[in-house]
Length: 444
Image 1 (cartoon, helix red, strand yellow):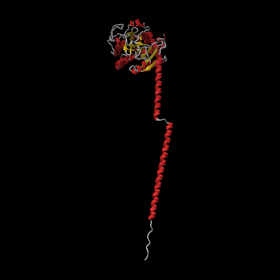
Image 2: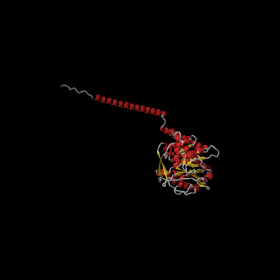
Image 3: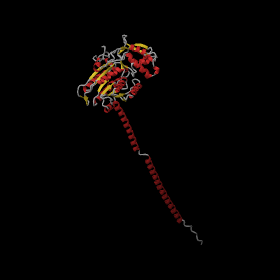
Image 4: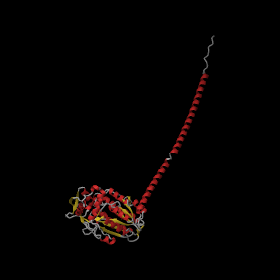
C-alpha cells in the first residue's frame, strides 16, 4: 500500500513574517515620533531666535507709544513756552511806570494805530484779534505784520473764548484794557444781525466777566459809537443828549454796551470809560467806509452812490482823522482811575465815564467826493440817490468839550489834510498802477 506524502507545515513561517512586520511598524513609528520631536524643537529654537532678534532691533510697541507721547508732550510744552514768552515780552513796559495794555481788535483799524502808539511811547502791549472776514483779512494780516516789526504780538483768538482770556490774564497782570474789538458797520447788520450780538454784547460781557475776577482788576477803556445818538436832532451831539432811539442794530448793541458797562461798574467796581467815535478815517482804514471805497471806485472808473436826505439835503459826517482818535484813546487810558474791586467784589465807588471823540466840523459827503477828485485828479461818476432806510443817519456833529476838559482832547487834522495822507497810503499799499496822474493835488 502506497504511503501518502503530507503538505509542508508553513504556519511557523507565517508567524515569523507577521512578527517581522510588527517590528518594522514599531521601529517606523518610533522613528517618526523622534523626527517630529526633533522638528518641533528645531522650530521652537528658530522661533526663539527670531523673537530675540525682533526684540533686540525693535522696542516694544508700548515703549514706542510712550516715547512718541513723550516727544509730542515735549513739543507742545516747548510751543506753549515759546507762546507764553512772546506774550510776556510784548506785554512788558519799556518805560518807568508804563502801562500794560491788552488791546482787543488789535489787527483792526483803530486797534493797530493805538497799539503802535502805545508801544512807541514805551508801554507794554498785547493784542487780541480773531481776524474775521467781515472785510479782507489780508489787510488785517498786513497790520499784524506791521505791528510785529515793532514787537507787538497779537494773539489770534475770540472774545468769547473764556479759557483763552483767563489764560492771558493769568500770564499777564494787565493794568488796562483797550477794548476795540467789535462787529462794525451799520448796513451789514441787516445781513448778519447775530454777529453783532455775538461780538458786541456777548463778547463784551465775557471780557468784563474775566476782568472782574482778575487780580488786579484792570481799568477798561472801550469803543462805543456816535451811532448811539440815533434819531437825536439836537446839534452838536452832547453826552447829555438822549440815546434811547437807535436807528440800527449796530447802534443798539453799542448802546447796550454802555448800559452793561454801568452794571459792571456798579456791582463789581470796574473802572470803565466809553468812547463814542465819530466817522474815523485815515491810512490803514476800513474798506467798508465811504471814503475808502469811493477812492477805489473813482480810480477804477466806477459809479459811486452819493446819498441825500429825503428832503434833498446833503448827508454830512463829522469825519475824524485817526491820529486825533488815537490821542483821545491814550488820553482816556492815562486818566483812567484804578478799578476798586478784588476777588470779583466791589470795595468802593469806581470811575464811570463816557466821551465823544469827533472832529467838531461836519462835512457834506459831496465835499468829501470833491476833495478826493482833486487828490486823484479824476472826475467821479456820481449817482445821487435818496438815503435808504438801512440804519444810516443824515448828520453827525460832535461836542467834545467834556473830553477836552478831562484829558485835553483837541482834534487838529482837517478833512483835506487827512484825506491827502490816506490817498498817499492807499496808492502806496495797493500798487503803483493805482497812482493818480502826475498833476494831482498829492504833488502840491
